[in-house]
Length: 253
Image (cartoon, rainbow, N blue to C red):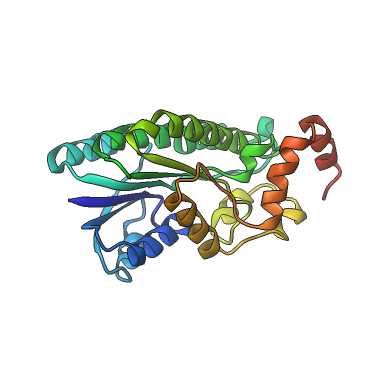
């Protein structure tokens, strides 16, 4: 049985990946949607052509992950693609933020993503794909977004290293590094702090970002960056010392 597994599949990037991959692939038997909100996934599944398995799981919950591990061991699917889309960010000064929310970002964005990847690789074959949702925040430390940016730097670095490790197995890893995207992300992120206005002016449509990510994964690219402004930011973050860029960011509103 050939399957695609998508985490964070109840909304945003994850839901969009599910819809687009559903239209692209003909040789897939099932698409597995993983997230906490079952009703939202069931609603998305109604618009999909493939057989869709809705798994209402919290990927930070160890008992839920053991349940998924048992499911994989029993059914032994061939995982043609894993999309690790689950994640969240909270803006604000680290020292005055809620500690559990800050640690939660590490649990979801780093620990759970790593565990999911580790569990799925044994069921992958040549030409399987892994898509990891990083962020343009991975390119530069982000004051008032410190932990989120650090978690995405982890995802970016981990994905690039993993791509090299899996090259001989012909399993290809793509780190997706979008800038601001028109998803519910900022509804959560801006609970206590607003993002820079310049970020809002570079916001991208979710369908365009996902389409580019799928294309880059198809062509076995290790990084997917959508849009002129974010590509320019990626170049800038390499060419200009981070200390200088951080000083500039202090004066931006």
